[in-house]
Length: 332
Image 1 (spheres, rainbow, N blue to C red):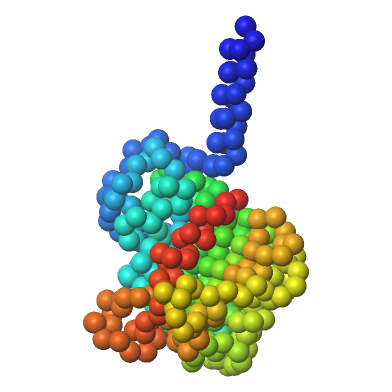
Image 2: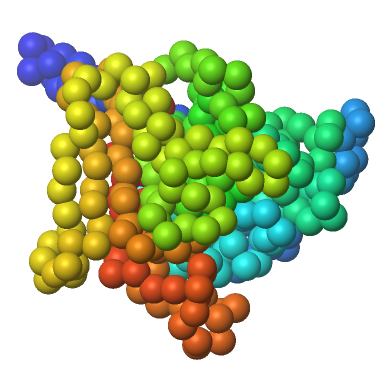
């Protein structure tokens, strides 16, 4: 009798471990909603309510999507005057084969509201629309998507570029929503002081990944003034998160392999000494890098022509080589 009893307990313990490693949403096991096809990107609309405007976002289901298998959610926020489709193309998060916990991701591309200058923007920027609660919008998207699809609630992530990246920082600095997002990645971020929710209160260890070029003329690496408002420097942003996470000492400096980056144009700064469990801060300092999402190929809007900002190239692909592997290491 002893052996079957032990085997039974072994099975129970194994199930307990699996339960602790993931958190299936209420959408798991439901029939895939009408109009949503694997390998396709579909628009979702949230009607205006409680003084908030109508909102839109696009959702890309992976080609092998099944609603009985838990998928990670990855939000990708466009920059000032950006849109959903261009952000999808720029961030490449709808590409085939992007997996977290061995399952292809669901990618989400929200749309900002027209700000005071008539261009799309996110909360926290000086030009964002007054009274628009983008944090509530993110919370609403998470709730809706967890009901529609089989989502691993412990594996929801946020990334974005420029004003969208500054908004990602605001999400990380807002405990009510940061508690639902496992890790954050910012690209060429506009870190206005108003994207820190005051002094950036935190209630948990938070993994932070940041990319920024030293020749960024839109969101200056050293901070300063933009659109009549102050921005903090990239070094201040990274050191601030290292301090919040309890990391000690200076960052460890490393580089990409010499085969990829023989001139060492990308300096990788890592704060991971005595940090709070589950936290880390990693910064990619791209020498002479512009206001761009680091890629080795051009986005469609460049029409094959190398130029400035997003039409410039780097020696690595941030999404495939760094962001997705980084997210894959962290869960709530």
